[in-house]
Image 1 (cartoon, one colour):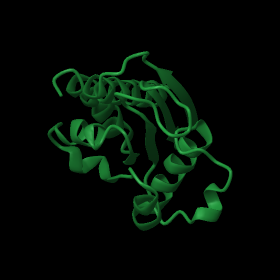
Image 2 (cartoon, rainbow, N blue to C red):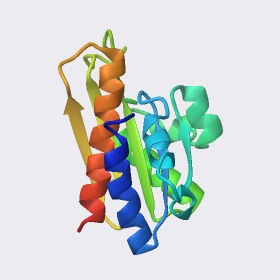
Image 3 (cartoon, rainbow, N blue to C red):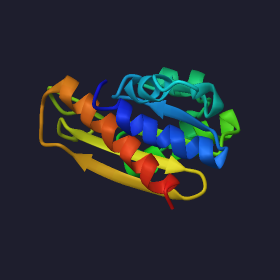
Image 4 (cartoon, rainbow, N blue to C red):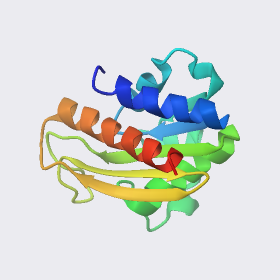
Length: 160
């Protein structure tokens, strides 16, 4: 968490300056992105909520995204990450939606993605989707790396 909090503080400062809000839908980071953002004092000014969307059931229940909406879409893909970011933004009526979906390790996922694969998306005043490949099989390290990259991406978009 210590490496994530400085990034979360940057995002928090920018969100507060802009008087904007955000929501998070994360998967393989398991809540680390939300935890980092909530670790910053005054988080209630910008953080509306989040969900760990780790399974199909979680996607249906927490995000209310039906199976038909993801037909032909892999979960650890850029289109899916963007769908999650747009959906969490809409569901929370936030200015920004941030999402993460990937394969932390120690093995890859059933879709053929290697451990260390993550797709990150932000939807709001701009949209951005990136794929991160760490090349590592260390689950906890990948969770931190994915979270850090998501927060860096958020800061980048908020700084424009």
